[in-house]
Length: 299
Image 1 (cartoon, helix red, strand yellow):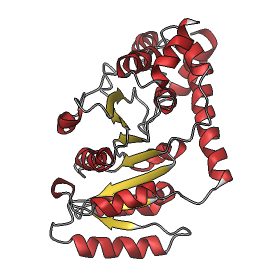
Image 2 (cartoon, rainbow, N blue to C red):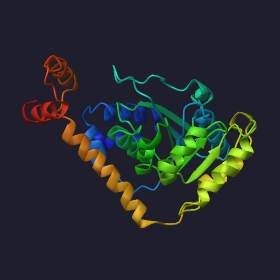
Image 3 (cartoon, rainbow, N blue to C red):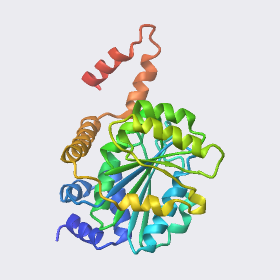
C-alpha cells in the first residue's frame, strides 16, 4: 500500500498519533502531504462549527463545556484552536489552551492549536487543509475556535457549516461590527457571562439589530464557567440547518479561492521580501505599489 494511503487508513481508524503527524505534514508542506490531500473525500459531511468573537468573550471556556456536553453523549470531538500570530516570527502566541487542559487525556477529544500565519481573518489555506484531514478522521463534530478581529473575521464563514459569534454584555463596540459585518456570518449569537450586569439589556438590543436583518438568528445566553445555557446551545448546534446549495457552493468557492491564492504565493520568499523592502525604504521616492510590481516581475 502507498505510504499516504496507509497514513489515511490509520487516520480514518481514529489513530490520534498518526492524525497529529499527518496534520504536521500538511501544515508544513512535507511529503506526502500533497498526496494525502488529493486522496481525501471533500464531500464528507462532518459538521464544522466556527466559534468566533472578541478576546475575553470566553470562547475557550465555551468550547470546553460544549465538548464536555457532547463527549458525555459518546461523541468524538475535534478542536482546532486558531491562535493569533506574532507578526515577527509567525508562531502561535498562545499555544495549546490551558483552559482545555482537562480534555487532553480524553480518548474522544482531539485538540490542535494552529497559528494564523498572518491571515487577518484568522483563516489560512493551511486551516482549510487541516480541517479536511480532520473530516477524514470520523469525528462527530469539529469545533474551530478563532480570534475575533472585526470584519475580516468573515473568512470563518467560508469554512464552517455554522458560525457562533460569542459576545459579552460589555461588547458595545462589537455591536457596531455586527451592523457592518458580523451579521453576515453569524448563524447564532451567544451572550456569554450572562450573569453580569447589563446582560439582559445587551441581549435585547442585539435582538433589535438582528430583527432588522434578512435572516433569523437565535440569541442565546450562557454562563460557560457555570455550565448555564449550554444544553440549549448544544441542541441548536446539532439541529441541521436548512439545505442551502448556494451556501455549499459558496463554502467550496471560498476554499478553492484560498487554496489557489496560497499556491500562487508559495514561491514568494517572505524573508527576501523583508530584506528588499528594508533596502528600498532607503530611497526617497519609495512607493509600495511600484515596489510590489517590481518584486512580482523580478523577485
